[in-house]
Image (cartoon, rainbow, N blue to C red; front, side, top):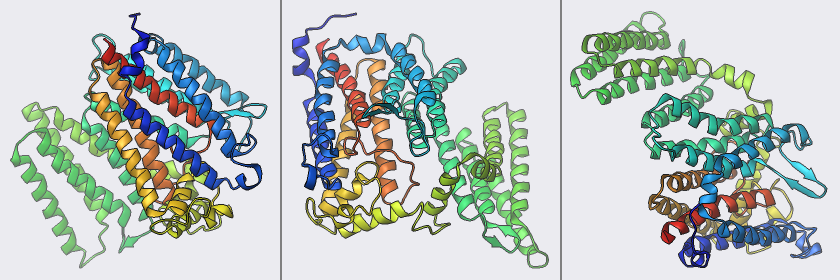
Amino acid sequence: MASYNKGSIWSTVDWITILLYVVMVTAGWFSICGASYEVETLGWFDPSGRPGSQLIWIGLSFILIFIIMMLDADFYNVFAYLIYGLVILLLIATIFLAPDIKGSHSWLVFGPLRVQPAEFAKFATALALAKLMSSYGFKLSALKNIVLVLTIILTPLAIVLLQKETGSALVFLALFLVLYREGMTGYVLLAALCAVTFFVINMKYSDVMIGVTPLGELIVLCIIQTLIVMLTGIVRPNLLPVKILSGLSVAVFLVAYVVSFFIPVNFVWVTIGLLVASSCYLIFLMVKNWVWHYLLVVLFAVISVGFLYSVDYIFDDILEPHQQTRIKVSLGLEDDPSGAGYNVNQSKIAIGSGGLTGKGFLNGTQTKLKYVPEQDTDFIFCTVGEEEGFIGSAAVLILFTVFIVRLISLSEKQKTVFARVYGYGMASIFFFHLIINIGMVTGITPVIGIPLPFFSYGGSALWGFTILLFIFLRLDASRKER
């Protein structure tokens, strides 16, 4: 390993990011105080209360930061796979050793201490991914490398799913954003966006009929046909195939519309026929012009249609009943104010009651009377909204935005692929947590139970995010030491 002058670390570390970290941890602690009204009986610093307990974790975090910064920067590169392997073994052991807590086996209990290994798997996976993608001769376009990348990302995801911890498992999908930065085609992101869109539309309008036509299926199939036309133009800048496909689409629908005046027409079958005709035309162009990219467009259409008609199976046979209910409530398909929708309804009431400036610190009635479950963990943002109002909520969002933009900027400045990939992985994880958590407490996304970084109560989460961040800051400091 290369040796560095340890005394120079604190002069090269990014103090702006550290300041943002301190501000968020401090604001998070005050939010926990506001959400945990036991401070009125136990006091703020009593270790048996949540504010006091979190303060201990914060103090230990600074010791952890010192250790991370004192280690040689090359340590994280050299031992990346070992760290990843150990964490994977710990995740597997957790399935068998962890007690059942609220339906999941994700917490290791040591007396009064509870640890969630999934929080530490995030930085370990980011390290392993960075190690792989910085290896000599690595190219993301190679099939072997794609398989290795998917293995690194999906292995912890699958294990955490076996722990019945869906929210923590989905966080690993954020690492696909790193692949996009490192050269992965944007079509993969388009496919992921389409999958989510098709799922939501089909669920939302599954029971809506226009004559004999299921509206949900028709909308999705029309989107697929539109994307076929667009992708055909992108694959090869030739307007003739685009014009033919567009004209064919318009002509088929006009004929079907006229026929519907005389006999009932299921436009779903019309669109499927159109998709088949379009696919056959593209296969003809592929053979005629030897443009194999047309085949990718056809495969996209086939897989999209297959996914559309597997939505019901995924929803009914793969998702757990409580997950089904949460999705239905989020999409407005069910009204469940006393069940799955209770958390979200109470959270929105708390945030809305804060108004512009909020009710003031420790004056939130919704949180003080504990109307919001998990108000100091996953739903901590509703405490901010009630006590600090719109101004305080906006300040928190601005703070996180500055923080994440700062991390992306620093990642782009890295001189090594390892540091850059790890930096983008870290920023992607923070971004995912922010978007999903805020969407969850405001009712935009389903409730999947992931914390707001540095704000939510919990030692495992705080340590996990702290390690994730300061490994990168150590790598960034070494950039200036070299």
